[in-house]
Amino acid sequence: MKRTNPLISIIVPVYNKEEYVRECVDSILGQTYRRIEVILVDDESTDASGAVCDAYGQADARVRVIHQKNGGPTAACVAGMEAASGGYYMFVDSDDYLEPEMLVQMTGRLAGVPGEIVCCDHVVEKQRGTEEVKSGTEPGIYEGDRLREQIKAKLIGEEKKVIPLSRCMKLCEKSLFEGNETYYDYSLRFGDDTNLMYPAFLESSRVVIMKDAFYYHYRYVEGSLVHGYDEGLFAGVERLMEAVGRTAEEKKAPDAVRAVAREHCYMLMYVMKNELRAPDKGYRKRIQAIFGEENIKTMLHNTPVAVTERSNQLLYMGMLYPGGVLLRVLRLILRLYDRR
Image (tube, rainbow, N blue to C red; front, side, top):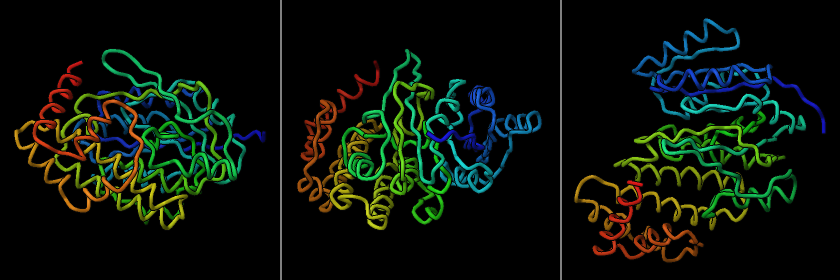
């Protein structure tokens, strides 16, 4: 394998993470791989996060700080890429942190070719303990037909992702993102990672899945967008699927139409779960309105999907048959689960 020593641009979107951002940046600056630049993008934080970023920028020449009007995570990532000088990008969320050897290990898997992505595993940090999470596909190097059939064809439309479409835990050659701005919906707060990374993966020429590489620590923050109730989630999912559908069609993704339909069904499980978590008693009417829409109902009943996880099976049954009694049972089960 060709040995490479590229400049890595590490892009960190920052919004109201004063409590965690120091640990995040310290873990980046403490990397044993030294050819890095760190771009902190303060997305108009209302706490002291921006001042913390400025302090790092003044103390270390490798750190650059951008302050911008609040535009959301994708806009922050794009701003970071526009300012980046490196040949490879890595995205790190400002409440997460890295193991010191992460970049040394990941750059050691690079071949120095355009369109490559190296993926590591991660550790979920919860208040009650940690959980190691591996990729959903076998470790190895994927190129050519193997890349198309085993990765690109399964990026969406699968219950268990072959690769998490998180922007984090990956080292990406920069050309993968060039020209993809047309596919981004900057209003997305749910699914923004998919919106950013799905077009990049479809353009990839080489993907490396590392083995037992638990270098990235993802902090599970209670009350964040993905763990609380979001009254705009259904509308956001519909916007996400519109962007994903256009990306799949224009980039000629394998089995695009059916894969997008299956992905839409799986995304609607998040909608069902979200509405069951609603704090008010109107959840049943909203669920019945959403899943009673003719286009949603038709898609769900006409799209074969594999649902193997028990919790998903219950949600899927509620989506197909959103009756009152079943919804009350599902809501009770979910409340019991959330208290664990």
